[in-house]
Image (cartoon, rainbow, N blue to C red):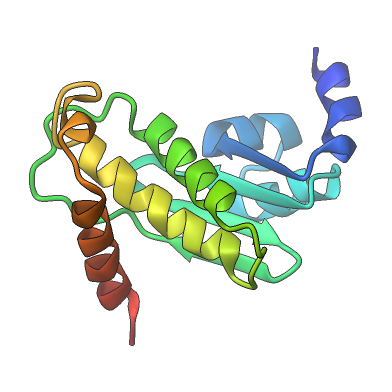
Amino acid sequence: QKDSLLRLLPRLDGLMLNDSEAMLLTGETNLVRAGHAVRKLGPKFVILKKGEHGAMLFSDDGVFVVPAFPTEMVIDPTGAGDSFAGGIMACLAADSDHKPGRLRRAMAYGTVVASLTVEGFGLDRLRTTTRQEIDHRLEQYRQMLAF
């Protein structure tokens, strides 16, 4: 099965996987080296999910790291990674202009969506979330990361 995956990777624009999967795929024990090694296998960009420790993007622009949003109330982390991925896809789909930095913005958006997910069981918290609430948290996140 690994051979099939290795044949597929050069055909991908992007690949999102968790840190363990990246290290297993590449044999690297260092996450940065693993991210670069996955990218050398073909995808134009690679996103490595690190759970509660955020995520890393490997692309032509270099390496970009986003921390997890510091959520005070974690009820259930189940589905946070899927929500992160869904938030990224939604943000990329909404950006038809392909502006510079779009992957970075999408990762921030995905991080915010994931932070809301952990505040309830399953998707309960997301079901009651408004776009304004997401935008407000995204602005809070942007301010946290500015220096």
